[in-house]
Image (cartoon, rainbow, N blue to C red; front, side, top):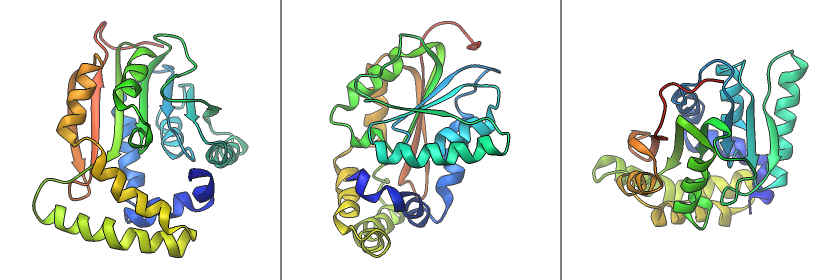
Length: 232
């Protein structure tokens, strides 16, 4: 599915969020609180926008983006090449599975995942893997669509995601099914409080979350127990 929509994936993200997804990625990147030179992994990186936000915010850090879909990674590498051509630091991108990360224990000072963990079949395992490769004192930051709490936001979300987004998907990508999948996957995904509990059970501490976009997007942050500020 993601291979088929990769060419219009960024356009749809910006349309669905009125461009606010860019700001939310910057907020998520800042939450890693990286020390200078500390390495960071962006899991399920897609076309690389969160990886690029990390590279821009922490230019001395080595940023690695990982995704399962090669078509998405091709787009991400094109963006990285443009940054390198301007003399700017750029992420490296590798293919891999979030449920079996091809990295050593404690390899990264932080791990991010933006709009990716909802699409894996074993969410607890995904957070166990992210915790495994994160150093003591480091953070795991998750940015994901979620069900908003009851009220105006929930009613707006029902209409927007249930009717408008599939229509946009058909017009922009020619694939209505892919964007009909989106509201269904959000409905099946753990609510924000439940996701915080999953992260805690994976061994992360001080788990907290913040909502955006009428409550329809949540940013969760958890910490790996251990030393204080993570160094390079």
